[in-house]
Length: 126
Length: 443
Image (tube, rainbow over the protein chains, first blue to last red):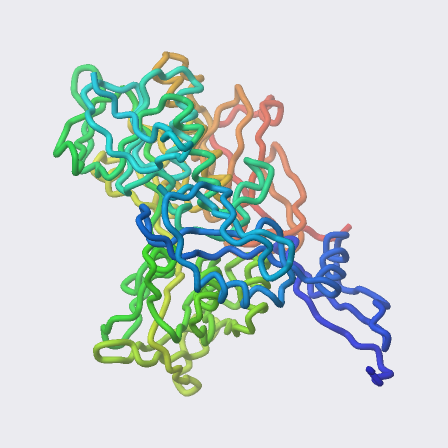
């Protein structure tokens, strides 16, 4: 139980454009957002709330592949996954070794880390 | 006649991006030098404009250029209207190239280019593993060689010369294509996007990135990359700080860094050392213009690329250029857009449909480092790209006395574009226009 009675302020850097607004999200003791400050357009407000409540990232990495044109196959998550699962997913993918050929869009790892999101090949690998 | 066409779809639908082309023994309408995003866009542009025989040559084993190692997403928002990874972007574009009957020759290097006297045709000397050295003729040439990275020599970092320092793009190729992790404890010099992307990449592959150092007082990469590549992994970014020495005998074992003053002179008394085995350099790109120099093209000392007309034609009749070989772009979509225009105009040149010649020279004025193209005409709309020297929050973009528009912000890392419409120039009878980006006072 959070006993902090003072509102908590978290800082974010807006990624919407090169202005890079310094965003502040203020929440109360019950983790409810009280106010978002520092944005100069709607994008900033939206970004700050998303980053605060449910930060997600698209993961792009490579997996070892044998008998292909190159030794690594670029892969991606089909959609963004929760940010705190990114490193674990990369560790999991480092244990795999694939065999060429592979086609763009082929599922390399279904339902990665139970996120419901597949990891797919980013290109054909003849 | 054997075709040089490569990349026909295999039975399984797998696109062979690599080419083991058999024979080149015909003359071309348009020859494209380089098969990266610019080359592919130029080749497609040439076909659209009516050129029948188009050849695209690349020195790698497959087309796609740098996109094949840029495995991160964020490409194609403008062109494909969705966020793609580099390899996806390359493959989609290359499918278009194949669908448009463009000959592709990979694993081949253009050693020299000549203008044939008499008929003004161009010839290039190509060296390839399968065909040896060949002279190939073409009516028009499009230069799309792209750029290469600046190296340690470009900024003269003192110290020893051990293994372990390299450009960020080379490390990217090692990690993403060649299955080779170049180091475990990494320092990155330069906060350009490639440096930031590699900070994340090395981290995801299990290396420790001690920090990113940037000599300028501001980061050079996109805010998105600052957040998603550095903040996400708690990698510190040190602004106004640079690497002043590289230590190590066989292998890099540490680097010394120091803060710099306003004129970029390091303060040695405040320097500190960082243990590391690898130093990655992300300190900018230089247009790759060896071939342009061999052709004696007029080059712009600021962009370090060819001087081009609004048709992306260089100082040599029938030789066009587009993409990073002309000037360094921010986004691959802009590279492709510009090179597409170069290819289209090369095609128009071949079929005898050149637009009227340019009659107005553009001059980079206040706070404008350069403008591309270097000249425009009054008969049609042109898009002029420029880069500012210093950031401004609110400014006016002024085209001589004929037009001005307010800009919300300008930064050197983001190209500014201006659509010049014929109506702006209706009452203009001069032969040169100055482009300024000036501070705008609040009314």
